[in-house]
Structure formats: C-alpha cells, structure tokens
Amino acid sequence: MLTEMPIPENLLSTFSPFVPPVLREHNLQERTLPASTQPFTKEFVYVTPYPESAAQWLIRLLDIFSGIVNRNKDLSCVVITETEYKQLSGVLDDLIYSVGEDETHPLSATMTLVSLLIKMYEDQHFPKLDSLFPELAESATVENTWEISDSPNTLSGQIDTDFVIVLFSIGCLLWKGGKSEKAISAYDLAISIKSDYASIHTSRGEAKSSLNDLSGAKADLQNALKLAEKQGKEDFGFIINERIKELDVVEAAVVYLSESKFSKYSIVRECRIQIGTLNSRADFALCDAEGNFITIVECKLDTSSDHGEYSHEPLKSYLCATDTQFGIFASGTIPDSWVFYENLRHNRFRQITRAEYEMQVLA
Image (cartoon, rainbow, N blue to C red; front, side):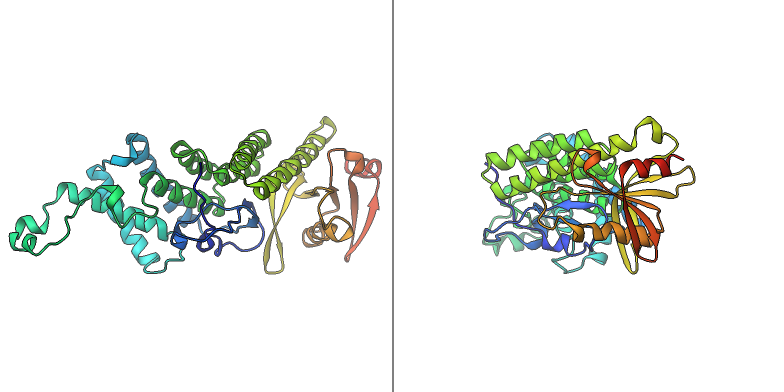
C-alpha cells in the first residue's frame, strides 16, 4: 500500500494565484521527510509562468533523467555513463548556484538526487582516499559503501521513490513554465516507476486538460479516484470526483461552442488574463480569426458552496479586463441552464437568453 507523502510546501510556496490549477493532496500525518522531498498533494492551487530559459533548463534536466531511468530498469543499482556524469556535474553547479542551502527551494530535492548520482559514479570509477593513503583506513570506524539503500544522502531511502519525487517536482515546474506536454512526459516517467500515487495521476490529468485532451484528463482522474478509494483517502477521492464532474461541464461547453454554427470561431483553453497586477485564468474563450475574445466561458459546478451571483464575479472581471462582449457561466452539462451575459461596459452587464446570445454572435 502507498506510503503517505506529506505536502511539498516548498514547491507550492512559489506558486501564486491563478493560471493552470494543480491538484494538491492535504496530508494530516506527521511529516517525516525534508520539505523538499514532499510533492504528493491534493487541493487546487494556481501557478504562474517563468522565463523560457528556466523551462528549457528543466527540459534538458528531464532528458538526462529520462535517459538514466529508461536505461536502468532496476533502479536499485543505477549505472551512470561518463557523459551523464559530466552532464550532471554541470547541472549540480547550476543547482548549487541557484539553490544553495535553501531546503525550501523547489529544486532542493533535485540537487540532493543529482549529488547522490554523481557520488555513485565517483565511488565506482575514482580511487578512494584510503586506497591512496592507507593510513586513513586505519582510523576509519565505519565501513563506507555506495549502495543506495545505505546512503544517508537519499531523499526517502529508496532510489525509485527519489526519482519519482524529483520527476513529479520537475513536472509541476514545467507546467508552471507553460510546458504542459513536457510536464506530461515527466509525469509519465514518474508513473512508469511507481504508478500508485494518485496525485501524479491528477496532475497529469490537469496537464492534459490544459491541452484540451478532456478524455485523457478524465481517464487520469478516474485512475486517481480508484487509487484514492483503494488507499482509504476519502477526502481526496471526493475532491477528485468533484473535479471529474467539473470537467464534464467543461466538455459540454466545448461541445456546444464546437457546433458547426460557431465554425468561424476557435476555442482557446486556459486563457491568461491580466487583472491589475494579477495574472488570472479563464477556463476558455471563443475567439475570432484575429484572436480577439468574442466570449469568455467559466465552468463551475452548481453544487459548489459559493454558487450564486458571487461566483459569477470572476467572469465579470474577465469581461471588464478584456473588454469582451459576451460571457457564459456554465454550471451544468445542459446549455439552457447556463447564464449568458452581455458586457455593457463600465462594469455593467445584462443577462440574456441563449437565443439572444446566438443571434448576436452569429450575426
């Protein structure tokens, strides 16, 4: 059965409100691992992008780890090539410069794993000091060994779990950088090592959702739900189930706006919207050929505790910030149950019928 992993506050502390959601899992058990080794979570938060150069650096690091994992089917006895050793040495220099002694840094766990892999290679290929200087061996009281299971430098004490922890973190950070496809590659690799972490399945599902792969997203969330139920995580299972229902609403809205009568428009998912100093995110928008927003759509379950006029306020803010003429608040899978708005400008809105909306948009 899955060993409980606490929340990675260090990783999520760098996430600011809005843009793609990451599903986090709360853990109420005592934390036994360093903060930087705790990526398995369960509550929705939002992340903002960072420079392209940082994303490309993470992608190169992911490529190195992918080569190591794919070549070493048995991660209890990892073999590092000379090329990988040189690559990891360069990565370690970057990590030391960026992370230093900050254990709360989102790449702190990665620095620990990279250091371990480098030490393994050096212990295998470079002579030890006690072989060069026998007198050192006489004063040694503890036999040194490079076996992973005995190394004090591992994150969790198990190298396969260490790789999963780091790959999950890299996936989250790539997603943060707007690289959903590469994030999915990191999650895929983590799942290929250990497939029983519900949080990784949920995160991969959310990344797929941001790429408009709603069927793939729901499949991942269904797998996560099964794992949560099997492992007795009822609260997490409830959250996942609610998210699946919400994706049903998103799917219904996408299907509606994909009808042939809207063929002159295109749909853009996870639209970034600037509201003052905040980077916000709308579920999706209907755009014209020039990329201008025609309609902004927000999807929210009608069973949500904040359902009502207040829950429509974010949509109205998006309409004001972008000067978009129409908005749709979708709270179920039936289009006639949705709320359609016309933006009258100056923070004034008129609720219209679906027929009125279509008559104006399709004119």
